[in-house]
Length: 194
Image (cartoon, rainbow, N blue to C red; front, side, top):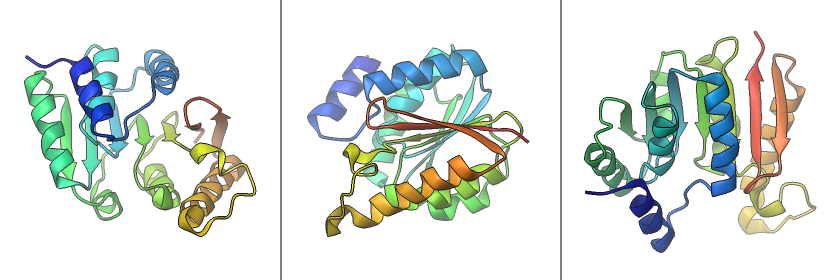
């Protein structure tokens, strides 16, 4: 039998990015407060965060999660199956930029933790799939502190610029109430007001 701790350890050993413990603690409070019934996650990795979310909500939730990397998606599907969560978590293989326009469900909560350079696109699609009261969470929004500094190295420039654009979009949109939390690598929490 496999457990959540083993999934976490394996991801850490293999340098697969997973949600940080302090970020997960903040999200746990949000999940318990909001009690979402449908969650959309962008960036499954090995399924760790989706499994955590499902466990926090006593499996009273349905999660769609999108993963670009086929190997990681397969590992996630296997982990979810072994933990008996197949009826609660659905892994969609593919590029979120292409998958999102095909979705038409309304979701109560979004967890964005995929390609940093695509966050503005993910936000537009999340807003389309949201309803009044939906929560949009964007992880790693401060990106090692680069986003709030005058960092401008070529290698990360695109990601940093797109994350800055995301922050501008969520803080200037009158239909969103947003806080940027300095937890983990930064977490943007936006509530849809209309």
